[in-house]
Amino acid sequence: MMNFKQNLTVLFWLYRQKAKTDGKAPIYARITINGKYTEISTGKKVNPESWDSDAKQVVGGGMEVKLANQKLAQLQTDVERIFNGLQTQFPQVTPAMVKNVYQGKPAIEEPKLVKPTAKNEQSVLEVCDEFIVKFQKRVEVGNASFQTLKHWRSTRKKVAAFIKYHFDRDDIYFSSLPDTVAEDFYDYLTLHVSKPLAEVTARKEVKWVRQIVKIGVKKKFIASNPMDGFKCSGGDVEVIPLEFWQVEKIQQKHFSVERIAEVRDAFIFQCFTGFAYQDIYDLSPENIVLVGRKKERWLVKHRGKTEVGEMVPILPIVEELISKYKNHPYCIANNKLIPVNSNYRYNVYLKEIADLCEIRDITGAIRRLDTHDARHFFADLMLNNGVPLEDVSKMLGHKSIRTTMRYCRVRKSRISENVAKVRQKLFSKSGSLREFA
Image (cartoon, rainbow, N blue to C red):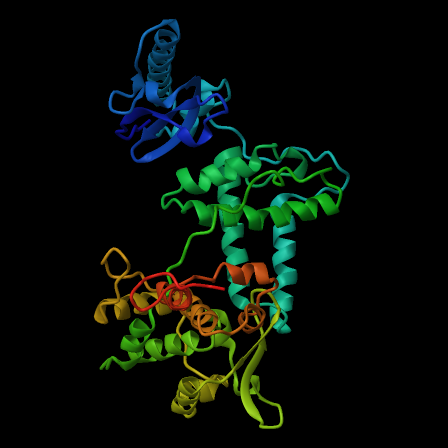
Protein backbone atom coordinates (compact mmCIF):
# COMPACT_ATOMS: atom_id res chain seq x y z
CA MET A 1 0.00 0.00 0.00
CA MET A 2 1.46 3.34 -1.10
CA ASN A 3 1.13 6.18 1.40
CA PHE A 4 1.25 9.78 0.28
CA LYS A 5 3.27 12.15 2.42
CA GLN A 6 0.78 14.01 4.56
CA ASN A 7 1.18 16.70 7.19
CA LEU A 8 -1.20 17.12 10.11
CA THR A 9 -1.71 20.33 12.08
CA VAL A 10 -4.13 21.01 14.93
CA LEU A 11 -5.07 24.63 15.57
CA PHE A 12 -7.21 25.79 18.50
CA TRP A 13 -9.34 28.92 18.13
CA LEU A 14 -12.08 30.74 19.99
CA TYR A 15 -15.47 30.88 18.25
CA ARG A 16 -16.41 34.35 19.52
CA GLN A 17 -19.62 34.55 17.44
CA LYS A 18 -21.09 31.68 19.45
CA ALA A 19 -20.61 33.34 22.82
CA LYS A 20 -23.48 32.61 25.23
CA THR A 21 -25.34 34.96 27.56
CA ASP A 22 -22.69 34.41 30.24
CA GLY A 23 -20.07 35.80 27.84
CA LYS A 24 -18.23 32.50 27.38
CA ALA A 25 -17.37 31.30 23.87
CA PRO A 26 -16.53 27.72 22.77
CA ILE A 27 -13.03 26.61 21.84
CA TYR A 28 -12.80 24.73 18.54
CA ALA A 29 -10.02 22.60 17.09
CA ARG A 30 -9.23 22.85 13.38
CA ILE A 31 -7.73 19.65 11.98
CA THR A 32 -5.81 20.33 8.77
CA ILE A 33 -4.19 17.74 6.48
CA ASN A 34 -2.38 19.02 3.38
CA GLY A 35 -4.60 22.11 3.05
CA LYS A 36 -7.95 20.41 3.73
CA TYR A 37 -9.53 20.84 7.12
CA THR A 38 -12.47 20.13 9.39
CA GLU A 39 -13.37 21.45 12.81
CA ILE A 40 -14.62 19.93 16.04
CA SER A 41 -15.72 21.43 19.33
CA THR A 42 -13.42 20.79 22.28
CA GLY A 43 -16.34 21.00 24.69
CA LYS A 44 -14.65 23.83 26.57
CA LYS A 45 -15.89 27.43 26.89
CA VAL A 46 -14.00 30.43 28.24
CA ASN A 47 -14.33 34.20 28.51
CA PRO A 48 -12.71 35.88 25.47
CA GLU A 49 -10.34 37.89 27.72
CA SER A 50 -8.93 34.57 29.02
CA TRP A 51 -8.00 33.33 25.55
CA ASP A 52 -4.45 33.92 24.28
CA SER A 53 -4.84 33.94 20.48
CA ASP A 54 -1.06 33.77 19.97
CA ALA A 55 -0.34 30.88 22.35
CA LYS A 56 -3.66 29.18 21.45
CA GLN A 57 -4.45 28.41 25.06
CA VAL A 58 -6.37 29.68 28.09
CA VAL A 59 -4.49 32.07 30.40
CA GLY A 60 -5.02 32.93 34.04
CA GLY A 61 -5.13 30.98 37.25
CA GLY A 62 -7.51 28.52 38.82
CA MET A 63 -8.56 24.91 38.30
CA GLU A 64 -10.92 25.76 35.43
CA VAL A 65 -8.08 27.19 33.34
CA LYS A 66 -5.84 24.22 34.16
CA LEU A 67 -8.52 21.69 33.15
CA ALA A 68 -9.26 23.56 29.90
CA ASN A 69 -5.60 23.51 28.82
CA GLN A 70 -5.30 19.85 29.80
CA LYS A 71 -8.30 19.10 27.57
CA LEU A 72 -6.69 20.88 24.61
CA ALA A 73 -3.41 19.05 25.10
CA GLN A 74 -5.21 15.69 25.39
CA LEU A 75 -7.27 16.39 22.25
CA GLN A 76 -4.14 17.18 20.26
CA THR A 77 -2.50 13.97 21.48
CA ASP A 78 -5.61 11.92 20.58
CA VAL A 79 -5.89 13.46 17.11
CA GLU A 80 -2.20 12.79 16.36
CA ARG A 81 -2.57 9.20 17.57
CA ILE A 82 -5.66 8.65 15.41
CA PHE A 83 -3.94 10.19 12.38
CA ASN A 84 -0.88 7.95 12.76
CA GLY A 85 -3.10 4.88 13.17
CA LEU A 86 -5.18 5.70 10.08
CA GLN A 87 -2.01 6.11 8.01
CA THR A 88 -1.22 2.44 8.60
CA GLN A 89 -4.69 1.46 7.28
CA PHE A 90 -5.36 3.85 4.38
CA PRO A 91 -3.20 5.21 1.55
CA GLN A 92 -4.59 8.70 2.18
CA VAL A 93 -6.16 10.14 5.33
CA THR A 94 -8.65 13.01 5.31
CA PRO A 95 -9.61 15.39 8.15
CA ALA A 96 -13.14 13.93 8.07
CA MET A 97 -11.74 10.44 8.75
CA VAL A 98 -9.82 11.71 11.78
CA LYS A 99 -12.91 13.52 13.06
CA ASN A 100 -15.08 10.41 12.59
CA VAL A 101 -12.74 8.18 14.59
CA TYR A 102 -12.35 10.83 17.32
CA GLN A 103 -16.16 10.93 17.64
CA GLY A 104 -16.37 7.14 17.85
CA LYS A 105 -17.57 6.53 14.29
CA PRO A 106 -16.09 4.43 11.48
CA ALA A 107 -13.33 6.25 9.60
CA ILE A 108 -15.33 6.06 6.38
CA GLU A 109 -19.10 6.19 6.73
CA GLU A 110 -21.35 4.98 3.97
CA PRO A 111 -22.98 8.10 2.43
CA LYS A 112 -26.63 7.19 2.54
CA LEU A 113 -29.96 8.69 3.42
CA VAL A 114 -31.47 8.31 6.85
CA LYS A 115 -34.83 6.58 6.55
CA PRO A 116 -37.72 9.04 6.36
CA THR A 117 -40.24 9.17 9.18
CA ALA A 118 -43.16 10.36 7.03
CA LYS A 119 -44.80 8.23 4.37
CA ASN A 120 -43.61 9.10 0.85
CA GLU A 121 -41.29 11.76 2.28
CA GLN A 122 -39.04 13.45 -0.23
CA SER A 123 -35.46 14.47 0.44
CA VAL A 124 -34.26 18.07 0.63
CA LEU A 125 -32.52 17.99 -2.76
CA GLU A 126 -35.52 16.28 -4.39
CA VAL A 127 -37.80 19.10 -3.26
CA CYS A 128 -35.18 21.65 -4.27
CA ASP A 129 -34.96 20.13 -7.77
CA GLU A 130 -38.75 20.04 -8.03
CA PHE A 131 -38.92 23.72 -7.06
CA ILE A 132 -36.26 24.70 -9.63
CA VAL A 133 -38.07 22.84 -12.44
CA LYS A 134 -41.28 24.74 -11.64
CA PHE A 135 -39.39 28.03 -11.40
CA GLN A 136 -37.78 27.40 -14.80
CA LYS A 137 -41.23 27.02 -16.35
CA ARG A 138 -42.18 30.40 -14.86
CA VAL A 139 -39.07 31.88 -16.48
CA GLU A 140 -40.00 30.36 -19.84
CA VAL A 141 -43.43 32.03 -19.83
CA GLY A 142 -41.98 35.34 -18.66
CA ASN A 143 -43.30 35.28 -15.08
CA ALA A 144 -39.91 35.08 -13.38
CA SER A 145 -36.33 36.22 -13.91
CA PHE A 146 -33.60 34.05 -15.43
CA GLN A 147 -31.10 35.68 -13.05
CA THR A 148 -33.15 34.48 -10.08
CA LEU A 149 -33.22 31.01 -11.61
CA LYS A 150 -29.41 31.07 -11.81
CA HIS A 151 -29.31 32.05 -8.14
CA TRP A 152 -31.54 29.10 -7.21
CA ARG A 153 -29.28 26.72 -9.13
CA SER A 154 -26.26 28.15 -7.34
CA THR A 155 -27.99 27.79 -3.96
CA ARG A 156 -28.83 24.16 -4.77
CA LYS A 157 -25.13 23.44 -5.34
CA LYS A 158 -24.27 25.05 -2.00
CA VAL A 159 -26.90 22.96 -0.21
CA ALA A 160 -25.62 19.73 -1.81
CA ALA A 161 -22.04 20.57 -0.80
CA PHE A 162 -23.18 21.42 2.74
CA ILE A 163 -25.04 18.10 3.12
CA LYS A 164 -21.97 16.21 1.95
CA TYR A 165 -19.67 18.18 4.27
CA HIS A 166 -21.83 18.32 7.40
CA PHE A 167 -23.76 15.03 7.24
CA ASP A 168 -21.38 13.05 5.01
CA ARG A 169 -24.33 12.01 2.85
CA ASP A 170 -25.44 12.68 -0.70
CA ASP A 171 -28.86 13.88 0.49
CA ILE A 172 -30.99 14.09 3.62
CA TYR A 173 -34.68 13.85 4.53
CA PHE A 174 -36.47 16.79 6.09
CA SER A 175 -37.26 14.77 9.22
CA SER A 176 -33.51 14.28 9.76
CA LEU A 177 -32.70 18.01 9.77
CA PRO A 178 -31.40 19.11 13.19
CA ASP A 179 -32.75 22.17 14.98
CA THR A 180 -29.38 23.84 14.38
CA VAL A 181 -29.42 23.37 10.58
CA ALA A 182 -29.65 27.13 9.88
CA GLU A 183 -26.66 27.90 12.11
CA ASP A 184 -24.77 24.91 10.69
CA PHE A 185 -25.37 26.04 7.09
CA TYR A 186 -24.38 29.61 7.98
CA ASP A 187 -21.17 28.39 9.65
CA TYR A 188 -20.39 26.25 6.60
CA LEU A 189 -20.76 29.21 4.22
CA THR A 190 -18.70 31.61 6.35
CA LEU A 191 -16.03 29.25 7.72
CA HIS A 192 -15.69 25.98 5.86
CA VAL A 193 -15.68 26.80 2.13
CA SER A 194 -12.62 27.73 0.08
CA LYS A 195 -14.02 31.24 -0.48
CA PRO A 196 -16.08 32.12 2.64
CA LEU A 197 -19.11 34.33 2.07
CA ALA A 198 -19.64 37.66 3.79
CA GLU A 199 -22.03 37.60 6.74
CA VAL A 200 -24.88 39.38 4.92
CA THR A 201 -24.52 37.14 1.83
CA ALA A 202 -24.52 33.96 3.92
CA ARG A 203 -27.64 35.04 5.81
CA LYS A 204 -29.40 35.65 2.48
CA GLU A 205 -28.49 32.10 1.39
CA VAL A 206 -30.02 30.75 4.61
CA LYS A 207 -33.16 32.76 3.78
CA TRP A 208 -33.39 31.13 0.35
CA VAL A 209 -32.96 27.62 1.75
CA ARG A 210 -35.59 28.37 4.38
CA GLN A 211 -38.10 28.59 1.52
CA ILE A 212 -37.28 25.02 0.50
CA VAL A 213 -37.66 23.75 4.08
CA LYS A 214 -40.99 25.62 4.25
CA ILE A 215 -42.20 23.42 1.38
CA GLY A 216 -41.32 20.39 3.52
CA VAL A 217 -43.55 21.80 6.26
CA LYS A 218 -46.42 22.38 3.82
CA LYS A 219 -46.08 18.79 2.57
CA LYS A 220 -46.19 17.65 6.22
CA PHE A 221 -42.76 16.02 6.08
CA ILE A 222 -41.93 17.95 9.28
CA ALA A 223 -44.14 19.72 11.81
CA SER A 224 -42.25 23.02 11.84
CA ASN A 225 -39.42 24.79 10.06
CA PRO A 226 -36.15 24.48 12.06
CA MET A 227 -34.80 27.51 10.18
CA ASP A 228 -37.53 29.90 11.33
CA GLY A 229 -35.68 31.11 14.41
CA PHE A 230 -32.57 32.17 12.48
CA LYS A 231 -32.16 35.91 11.85
CA CYS A 232 -31.57 36.18 8.12
CA SER A 233 -31.06 39.94 8.03
CA GLY A 234 -27.54 40.99 8.89
CA GLY A 235 -28.45 44.62 9.46
CA ASP A 236 -28.70 47.34 6.85
CA VAL A 237 -25.39 48.28 5.31
CA GLU A 238 -25.42 51.98 4.54
CA VAL A 239 -24.70 52.69 0.90
CA ILE A 240 -23.30 56.17 0.31
CA PRO A 241 -24.88 57.40 -2.95
CA LEU A 242 -22.68 58.75 -5.70
CA GLU A 243 -22.49 62.52 -5.93
CA PHE A 244 -24.05 64.12 -9.00
CA TRP A 245 -20.67 65.42 -10.15
CA GLN A 246 -19.25 61.89 -9.99
CA VAL A 247 -21.98 60.54 -12.26
CA GLU A 248 -21.48 63.52 -14.56
CA LYS A 249 -17.74 62.75 -14.67
CA ILE A 250 -18.47 59.16 -15.71
CA GLN A 251 -21.02 60.29 -18.30
CA GLN A 252 -18.64 62.79 -19.92
CA LYS A 253 -15.53 60.59 -19.90
CA HIS A 254 -14.33 59.50 -23.36
CA PHE A 255 -13.55 55.79 -23.64
CA SER A 256 -11.71 54.54 -26.70
CA VAL A 257 -12.66 50.92 -25.95
CA GLU A 258 -16.20 50.25 -27.18
CA ARG A 259 -17.06 47.58 -24.59
CA ILE A 260 -16.25 49.98 -21.74
CA ALA A 261 -18.19 52.82 -23.35
CA GLU A 262 -21.27 50.57 -23.66
CA VAL A 263 -21.07 49.55 -19.99
CA ARG A 264 -20.74 53.23 -19.04
CA ASP A 265 -23.88 54.03 -21.06
CA ALA A 266 -25.81 51.17 -19.46
CA PHE A 267 -24.79 52.46 -16.03
CA ILE A 268 -25.91 56.03 -16.87
CA PHE A 269 -29.17 54.54 -18.17
CA GLN A 270 -29.62 52.93 -14.74
CA CYS A 271 -28.70 56.14 -12.92
CA PHE A 272 -31.57 58.03 -14.55
CA THR A 273 -34.21 55.27 -14.54
CA GLY A 274 -33.50 53.48 -11.24
CA PHE A 275 -33.87 50.11 -12.95
CA ALA A 276 -31.90 47.17 -11.56
CA TYR A 277 -29.44 45.23 -13.73
CA GLN A 278 -31.81 42.42 -14.68
CA ASP A 279 -34.53 44.92 -15.58
CA ILE A 280 -32.45 46.97 -18.03
CA TYR A 281 -31.16 43.65 -19.41
CA ASP A 282 -34.76 42.68 -20.25
CA LEU A 283 -35.91 46.07 -21.59
CA SER A 284 -37.33 46.04 -25.12
CA PRO A 285 -39.05 48.71 -27.27
CA GLU A 286 -42.37 47.23 -26.09
CA ASN A 287 -41.62 48.60 -22.61
CA ILE A 288 -41.93 52.18 -23.92
CA VAL A 289 -45.49 53.33 -23.20
CA LEU A 290 -47.17 56.63 -24.10
CA VAL A 291 -48.82 58.16 -21.03
CA GLY A 292 -51.44 60.93 -20.73
CA ARG A 293 -52.75 63.44 -23.23
CA LYS A 294 -49.25 64.66 -24.00
CA LYS A 295 -48.24 61.10 -24.97
CA GLU A 296 -45.25 61.29 -22.64
CA ARG A 297 -42.84 58.39 -23.15
CA TRP A 298 -42.43 56.17 -20.07
CA LEU A 299 -40.61 52.92 -19.37
CA VAL A 300 -43.09 50.47 -17.85
CA LYS A 301 -42.44 46.86 -16.82
CA HIS A 302 -42.71 44.35 -13.99
CA ARG A 303 -39.58 44.19 -11.89
CA GLY A 304 -37.91 40.79 -12.19
CA LYS A 305 -37.08 40.48 -8.50
CA THR A 306 -40.43 41.44 -6.96
CA GLU A 307 -42.88 41.12 -9.88
CA VAL A 308 -44.10 44.59 -8.87
CA GLY A 309 -44.79 47.09 -11.64
CA GLU A 310 -42.26 49.88 -12.03
CA MET A 311 -42.77 52.93 -14.25
CA VAL A 312 -40.44 55.82 -14.96
CA PRO A 313 -40.84 58.83 -17.28
CA ILE A 314 -38.03 58.82 -19.84
CA LEU A 315 -35.63 61.69 -19.07
CA PRO A 316 -33.75 63.39 -21.95
CA ILE A 317 -30.43 61.68 -21.16
CA VAL A 318 -32.16 58.26 -21.28
CA GLU A 319 -33.90 59.21 -24.53
CA GLU A 320 -30.51 60.00 -26.06
CA LEU A 321 -29.17 56.57 -25.10
CA ILE A 322 -32.22 54.79 -26.53
CA SER A 323 -31.72 56.68 -29.79
CA LYS A 324 -27.96 56.00 -29.77
CA TYR A 325 -28.41 52.22 -29.63
CA LYS A 326 -31.53 51.96 -31.76
CA ASN A 327 -29.58 50.41 -34.66
CA HIS A 328 -27.00 48.55 -32.59
CA PRO A 329 -26.60 44.96 -33.95
CA TYR A 330 -27.12 43.40 -30.49
CA CYS A 331 -30.29 45.44 -29.85
CA ILE A 332 -31.74 44.61 -33.27
CA ALA A 333 -30.95 40.88 -32.99
CA ASN A 334 -32.31 40.57 -29.42
CA ASN A 335 -35.06 43.23 -29.49
CA LYS A 336 -33.40 45.22 -26.71
CA LEU A 337 -33.25 48.93 -25.89
CA ILE A 338 -29.61 48.90 -24.82
CA PRO A 339 -26.72 46.41 -25.04
CA VAL A 340 -25.93 44.90 -21.63
CA ASN A 341 -23.15 42.49 -20.65
CA SER A 342 -23.49 39.60 -18.24
CA ASN A 343 -23.81 40.75 -14.62
CA TYR A 344 -20.29 39.55 -13.82
CA ARG A 345 -18.64 41.33 -16.76
CA TYR A 346 -20.76 44.42 -16.21
CA ASN A 347 -19.47 44.78 -12.63
CA VAL A 348 -15.89 44.02 -13.67
CA TYR A 349 -16.01 46.80 -16.27
CA LEU A 350 -17.63 49.17 -13.76
CA LYS A 351 -14.66 48.72 -11.46
CA GLU A 352 -12.42 49.57 -14.41
CA ILE A 353 -14.53 52.67 -15.12
CA ALA A 354 -14.31 53.78 -11.48
CA ASP A 355 -10.54 53.48 -11.70
CA LEU A 356 -10.27 55.39 -15.00
CA CYS A 357 -12.60 58.14 -13.75
CA GLU A 358 -10.99 58.20 -10.29
CA ILE A 359 -14.31 57.75 -8.50
CA ARG A 360 -13.35 57.59 -4.82
CA ASP A 361 -15.21 56.70 -1.64
CA ILE A 362 -15.22 58.70 1.60
CA THR A 363 -11.86 57.19 2.60
CA GLY A 364 -10.20 58.41 -0.59
CA ALA A 365 -9.83 54.91 -2.07
CA ILE A 366 -11.12 54.03 -5.56
CA ARG A 367 -14.77 53.07 -5.13
CA ARG A 368 -15.87 49.50 -5.85
CA LEU A 369 -18.59 50.55 -8.26
CA ASP A 370 -21.39 48.09 -9.04
CA THR A 371 -24.77 48.13 -10.78
CA HIS A 372 -26.71 48.74 -7.57
CA ASP A 373 -24.92 52.06 -7.03
CA ALA A 374 -26.90 53.45 -9.97
CA ARG A 375 -30.19 52.50 -8.32
CA HIS A 376 -29.17 54.22 -5.08
CA PHE A 377 -28.12 57.32 -7.02
CA PHE A 378 -31.51 57.52 -8.76
CA ALA A 379 -33.43 57.18 -5.49
CA ASP A 380 -31.21 59.76 -3.80
CA LEU A 381 -31.58 62.14 -6.76
CA MET A 382 -35.37 61.92 -6.78
CA LEU A 383 -35.86 62.14 -3.00
CA ASN A 384 -33.53 65.09 -2.59
CA ASN A 385 -35.25 66.97 -5.39
CA GLY A 386 -38.68 66.82 -3.80
CA VAL A 387 -40.20 63.72 -5.42
CA PRO A 388 -42.54 62.12 -2.82
CA LEU A 389 -41.44 58.86 -1.22
CA GLU A 390 -44.52 57.03 -2.56
CA ASP A 391 -43.65 58.03 -6.15
CA VAL A 392 -40.03 56.96 -5.78
CA SER A 393 -41.19 53.63 -4.33
CA LYS A 394 -43.36 53.03 -7.40
CA MET A 395 -40.56 53.96 -9.80
CA LEU A 396 -38.20 51.54 -8.04
CA GLY A 397 -40.75 48.72 -8.10
CA HIS A 398 -40.70 48.20 -4.33
CA LYS A 399 -43.39 46.15 -2.61
CA SER A 400 -43.29 48.38 0.45
CA ILE A 401 -42.39 51.99 1.19
CA ARG A 402 -40.36 50.62 4.12
CA THR A 403 -37.93 49.24 1.54
CA THR A 404 -37.68 52.61 -0.16
CA MET A 405 -36.95 54.32 3.14
CA ARG A 406 -33.60 52.50 3.25
CA TYR A 407 -32.61 54.59 0.22
CA CYS A 408 -33.35 57.85 2.00
CA ARG A 409 -30.27 59.81 2.89
CA VAL A 410 -30.35 63.36 4.21
CA ARG A 411 -27.60 65.38 2.56
CA LYS A 412 -25.61 68.17 4.20
CA SER A 413 -26.78 70.57 1.50
CA ARG A 414 -30.41 69.98 2.38
CA ILE A 415 -29.72 70.41 6.09
CA SER A 416 -27.88 73.63 5.30
CA GLU A 417 -30.78 75.00 3.22
CA ASN A 418 -33.38 74.19 5.88
CA VAL A 419 -31.31 75.59 8.75
CA ALA A 420 -30.70 78.75 6.68
CA LYS A 421 -34.45 79.30 6.61
CA VAL A 422 -34.60 78.93 10.39
CA ARG A 423 -31.60 81.25 10.83
CA GLN A 424 -33.21 83.94 8.67
CA LYS A 425 -36.44 83.66 10.62
CA LEU A 426 -34.93 83.75 14.12
CA PHE A 427 -31.87 86.01 13.71
CA SER A 428 -31.14 89.41 12.23
CA LYS A 429 -28.25 90.03 9.85
CA SER A 430 -26.12 91.13 12.83
CA GLY A 431 -26.78 87.79 14.54
CA SER A 432 -29.07 88.99 17.30
CA LEU A 433 -32.37 87.26 18.05
CA ARG A 434 -35.39 88.85 16.47
CA GLU A 435 -38.13 90.11 18.70
CA PHE A 436 -41.45 88.30 18.37
CA ALA A 437 -44.75 89.77 19.49
